[in-house]
Length: 334
Image (cartoon, rainbow, N blue to C red; front, side):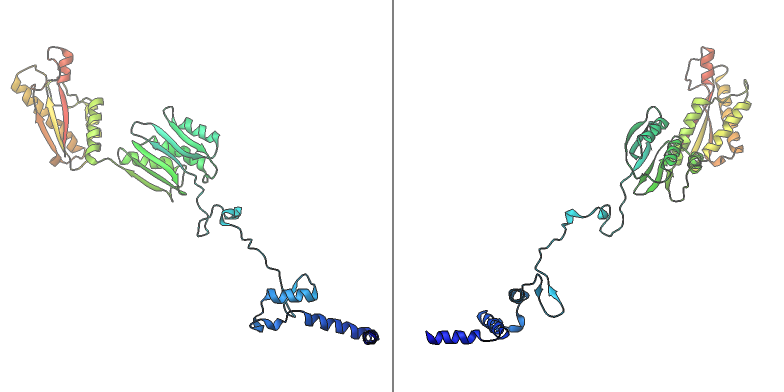
């Protein structure tokens, strides 16, 4: 007991600095040795950091004289479904995508206009519907993203479509197109002219077709037969002046089908001798053929045929019936 007291008294007589150093050494000896790791040079940051934390008590774990090791953090990556608004509307290539704005006006063979797609406002939607006409069908929806000068182009498009047989003008995928069917080349030029007065057609895709040549001439002949009557001076083969003008206009239309054969048929009423009527019908058909040739139709396409009184279309017992039987008929052959 005396020895213990003596050693304790001896220890207390040490200077304070020596006693502090002794306590520090004893604390270090009591800790797990760092060299117990299989490879001292591969001590992990976590292991080394924990030790240093115990020694230093710092918020950031020591990892050398020039740097610190931050505590391990959880992965806070934003999921793909949580992309910011800046990425909206872009393709995988990074280029902006089309906003989806589309519009079209389509004229059917029945003459009815159908408006489809998008318009920038309800006001313009109603205005275009009025311009399209009473029989129009409006299937448009208001949407932002219209191209420049959309209102003016849409109005001009409706006006142009009304000038052809059928067609469609559309704004799709960022570009304009005009497809359709015109009755002839003159009509095609006219509708393009109407559109070009209000729109620059430089970047437009335009494809306005014409009917087959034979169809063009056939429809022209049918229209001519319904609206025109070729007349001659009584008992002669001389065409009246209005009939000459009508035949010349017909010749211009027949130039659209240069390979089509044209048969000009002459018919008479039943007055007079049958042989005389046959001769008269042939000569009147030949007179019309000569007028067509003078207007530019090739004589290789023309055939004069006389039927006399053999094919009446009305009664020869009345004045009106006889007038109907005296006629010129055009037949076409491909």
